[in-house]
Image 1 (cartoon, helix red, strand yellow):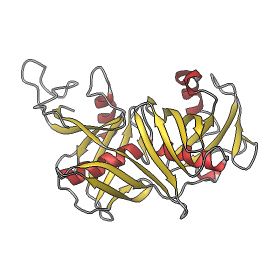
Image 2 (cartoon, one colour):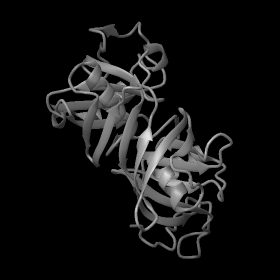
Image 3 (cartoon, rainbow, N blue to C red):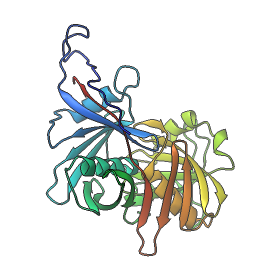
Amino acid sequence: MALPLAAASLGWGSGREMGRGIELNMKFTKMHGIGNDYVYVDGFSEVVEDPAGVAVRVSDRHFGVGSDGLILILPSTVADVRMRMFNVDGSEGEMCGNGIRCVAKYAWDNGLARSNPMRVETGRGVLALSLSVGADGRVGTVAVDMGEPILELESVPVDDTQVRKVDHAEWEIPAHGAWEGGRGVFVSMGNPHLVSFVPDVKNVELEKVGPALERHPAFPRRMNVHFVQVVSDQEVVMRTWERGSGVTWACGTGACAVTVAGALTGRTGRKALVHLPGGDLQVEWKGNGNVEMTGPATEVFRGEIAV
């Protein structure tokens, strides 16, 4: 349930000083999908001139709102709404699986769109989302048709001259920085993912190897990195280093990539319960080739901020 908040009064020199009446000029909503939290701005009524810069400011967990980035909910000429997402470092991402569920919830709950399934325009293309609406008329969970996974290295993208094929799905990634070398599966869900299977995810020094793999020279557009522990053929545990944001509590596109990688390597079936630090997602790689992800979308609070 959203907490009423008259104003989260934060500024970085663009408004008057705190205690002397700060300017409040951008309304926002804080939302999360199993702990993967973003600051959402309704682009139907608000104009964000510098979204990359705003993303950096609002994401700061000490001097800003605190989030994994900024997501704009905008009008679309080809879908019900359009989504743009920016990481903590200001870089723009193609897609966010947890974020898109929150976009659909916001659009429905606030009357921006009333289609169910709802169509959302993203950097990946237009995706269809099926909404579960409660008795209170508000969205609780969302199932997203994420489309087909992209497996060709050139399209992920990965420089195939810098990795070595181990079998039909796994590749050897050479040492770089804190990464001492190892195997992984490459999957794009509109954004690039490396999935590495390990005996115990708790033993991975994610803060060290994550940055090294994100910026490995084999990855021209950097990389989202996931370490995965298989519990059974229908259940996995994963930890994520997210491109442009660092360690995050959840990654929806990553959970889809993990399910695809598990099926490709025979470690799991095509349907899996994926445990992430922030909660669980249900993911299925369907017979039509598309991946469907189902999980909650939660509003935390609303406020205004000077940018």
